[in-house]
Image (cartoon, rainbow, N blue to C red; front, side):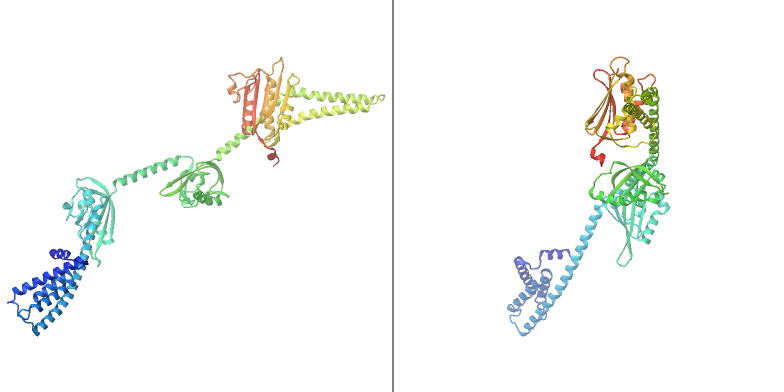
Length: 627
């Protein structure tokens, strides 16, 4: 059969010029061989069968070279028989025999063509099956990361790939015909694991199991084995296909990941800040224990829900649109930045918290992590601190007035004495009917009125200064602040011989402040300068206001003895004082007030002696003040 196939491949059907010449040569050789056989067996072959050798030649040519060569052999045989008759004559009987030969040749060529076509189809199918089988073998052997083997119906190995040899250590020769329990541990064999695996695959079509498997050297590895049933076209069991994969390293990594995840969860459970993880659609993926405590929800209640469940309006309605806009534009206005928001608890109550959002990619998904810190206690503490500061500031003002009591009494005594003198003079003039008293009385009463207004202004400023009230900021002209502060600050200064000057920028401008608190700062600085004046020599205090870019700078300077360099760095700390009887809170309160208004306060030596105190406040443009 192999010789015939090689001959057929060598003598291909007539294709092209070379094929025709090959066919002609083959036909001539076949006819010549048939003629020689006819001559050799002339005595054996009678007149009834002179064309048998030529029919064999026709079959040979048609089968091995195609129908065209078969026809050519038949025609050459007919011509040879016609020109070279066996008994040197060509009778009517010979014509009949030739006709029968041609008919038989045509029939033989046709039948040979059918047989040849069938053989070619069989060979093609066989070749395809061989190719597929070889490709399947190559595919199985190339799967070196998986052990692949085929078992017969009893569970014995019939095929063993290179991956199985690498994984288990046994060669194909060593395992062919062995029962598949060879790869199980003794414990599993004793418990019937191999038999159960076959039974499950036979019944359900497939069995997937994880467990320990044994190598040739006795070592073990954790494996995932899939055993599948293989049936023929009629559903009859042929055997089983088995794929084994080493998952030892994978399982180790999985356990390490689980351990790290458990560690991370345990760490996060102790972190006071709540953590919420959402996807790009706003759906909650994770809800920490701190978040459960903060919002009152259990994790199972909120996972899978939209995070807007935890928000108040208008954030609740706008959050999904914001995430969608961020995912399309990648504008990171919130990522990594802390901001204050209001949260909504399960019971409907609200609370302030600080939210910081981070972004990450996990498993091909975009995730957002929110860290939330409850601000309820901190804001309550800040509010209490502000109340205490306001109380301390008020006490400081009252204390300042207390220290000025004698000076204020002297300052108020002057206008009151003047009023009494003017009234007495007016009464005396009116009593003297001999004099023209109208003009004198009018002038005296006008002076008395001015002195009364002066005393009233001092009392009014004093009442406003010591009044208790909440901090209220408003837009205030700078000159009003300076004027009101000087009304109280300069009380008694003239008595001590202090020269007081005021220099305002033109225009002075406006500031957004609590007027009483800023007046307290100015009053404190002015009174400190007055008290620092020496008993002898020139005494001078200068108050000036200048514009520095977007800040208004207030300066109070004197020509006193200056500040001890050792105290200067601590000058604005609490309980630090340059006075023997002072509590050391005045300048500390001044710093608190100035910084609360967005400014700063400092002191520096004055050229020629003395000290200059400066503080700044944000200024407001004229358009803003009227807007």
